Length: 142
Image 1 (cartoon, helix red, strand yellow):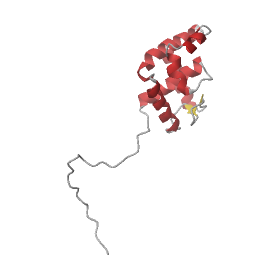
Image 2 (cartoon, one colour):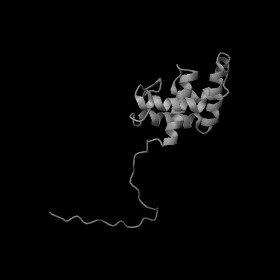
Image 3 (cartoon, helix red, strand yellow):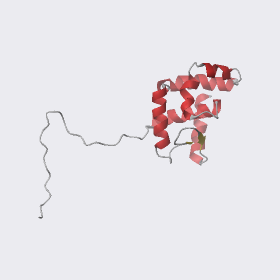
Image 4 (cartoon, helix red, strand yellow):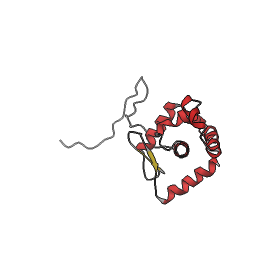
């Protein structure tokens, strides 16, 4: 049975247009990529052993952060204050967690940090372009 291909027209639905199921967009926008990498840079400068998920707690007024603040240098204090101002829009734990998840599972060729799949650790990449980007992040906070 050889039938020629003819495009089938859809009948209108009373419930609205039928859209095919698509996978969620996991790519970060440029501004989201910058936000995540700025947050990871802050963590690396303030609490290097912290997991990537720790940023909202670090930037908040939590008790655990207050005890560490006394030992921070003036530069770290400045980084913290500027980081709060620059990242205030993404410091809710659910928002930050979603950004880190997308960053960890996204394209690794454009990221300046490696983040483990279980999000227990992160670290700087050693490729040339990421070092330049980290220099820019450092200058943003200075």
